[in-house]
Length: 440
Ligand code: ADP
Ligand code: MG
Image (tube, rainbow, N blue to C red; front, side, top):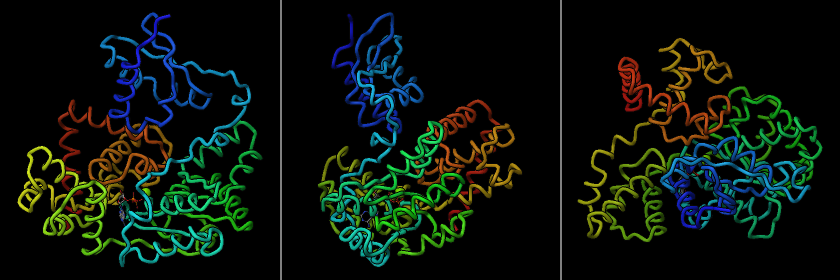
């Protein structure tokens, strides 16, 4: 039977990773293209969960990759393999699916501490050393891009290193999905068994739970069970517990039982230390005046610092020569200053509310009529263009939609801007207004 060669398959995987990073998963490497007939490449999956994910979300991405790699108009089909009937009946939360992979660079060694994050950093170290015994829960909050995810992953790394086995690091989205799956399949007891018997439960961006009533209720009980058995709970959010809209009092008060610590914007010195650290990680030599230049200009968050550093690095690779202040100036050019815009998701909500006459709750709702769906898509587009939020984070602000929905919205608006001049101007105007606001 004909099949495709390793090289073509490798090219497909590379294409998927670079073009659709949000869809790519590390287990793609273990997929096997089995045969190629009548224009269809069949790909064999390891279990039902993979099969479900691929057929529901990745069909067109894989087909596009196959067309690019083969240069022919082919499509892709996914074959569920199931030699093992046990897998069939296991649920995704029992398959370590959804457990977020830790970024190997997000360690304590690579985390710079300074006045902006001294408390959460120290608390994180203490919790990692004695999980369940010092601060429980540990609740870390702060604006986007200030290091919450890095810090909690550092704690996870450290707990693993100390031999703690069952550390579950997940997003709110995953918790909710697993919960819904358990309800639909009538296996709530298995869900509970899974979640209530971990050594540490780490949930990133817990503010997104606010929009999900039943999941919140379940989380409440999960929390109680873990707390009572002295298992460590670690949460992050973009707001303090009391600041998360529509989070009920009993959860707010529980989050306050342990330690609530804020990460603030880093001062110049900390930013300089971070630039040095990141440069070292990337094996780049930076003179001190360049370190200062980057740190002085990228002030709103750390993702911005990383962006500036990457630009300078790319510039020096492209044009050769040692990195010096003049080169950094040139590399960052118009980027410095303008990148410190600070449009927030709240600004965008407000602009849309005024402009389209919708309510913020409409934007977060599941309602699909055009008078609401359209402004919602515009907001997602604006959030992508004007803030540093990831697709997942944006989805979270709109009633917990997943990143593919957000991506779809962004593409739709992009297309429409090209086709409809009036709409194009309209959105351009909204963006200018928001940026103006962000400057002051
Ligand atoms: P958040 O989750 O708060 O939005 P992240 O943890 O994703 O922020 O941090 C954004 C980027 O900034 C990451 O690449 C992270 O490594 C880096 N970063 C944040 N804080 C620090 C720090 N104190 N030291 C070193 N790098 C940091
Ligand atoms: Mg984060």
